[in-house]
Length: 322
Image (tube, rainbow, N blue to C red; front, top):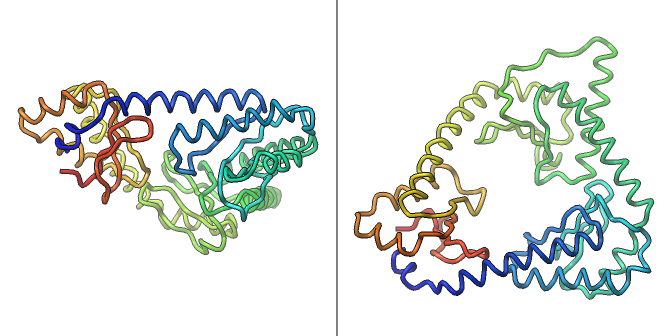
């Protein structure tokens, strides 16, 4: 790691930080022009400089063709830049408009012209319905309910609608079930019916259930894993607290601005072990490292990588770094 730090070109760090600022500015300009709720291009894995150029095309498209648009405001739609050609271009349940960055501006325009005032109205109607049904389901289960990665927006809406109807029927027949005693820090994650036929427990203490499961099956999952969930949450809370203490110590000793995980796959244990490695260096090595780390940001990445610069100019350290 010291070899990497000694060979860093700090002009590259400054440039990458500037590129990130330019990309954020490009997003703000495009959002104001189109009135999108958000623009997401993180899934592309592009640099901030390339992403800024791509999003600027979106702003130019609005300036040239705004008179042809079939709605004045695209809110609450959000743009997702993706090369996935198999999903719906305009999703009235997830509120997503998918644009392929490899497509031409006229192809983008063709997709955006399919969005009308009626599309916006339908999306808002679906969001209001989801919010109402979700509130009923969360009251029935006593926990926060969120959509998982494998569950599509339509499947998620249908699942919540079905569970809400089931809850209403149980209440009308006086069949309400007492809530299982589980921690309010956890949540229920709705995953695809094809991927999850039965309930599971995550390492963070949250519950995974399939979209095809009914309230009774979900409650059974909560009851089966309630004790283990409490234990997982307690252990993870202790690990996070220890990790936060080490982060504070790193920031103090090396003058680092920020320390964070690059990927959600990095566990608190891995992050703590990686940062502890820096603290265990002898004083001479620490002084050398401080010269390069002071004022910078550190990102902790998974194993199998080398030390490198992140897109935002942060210094990325893998968990198996020595």
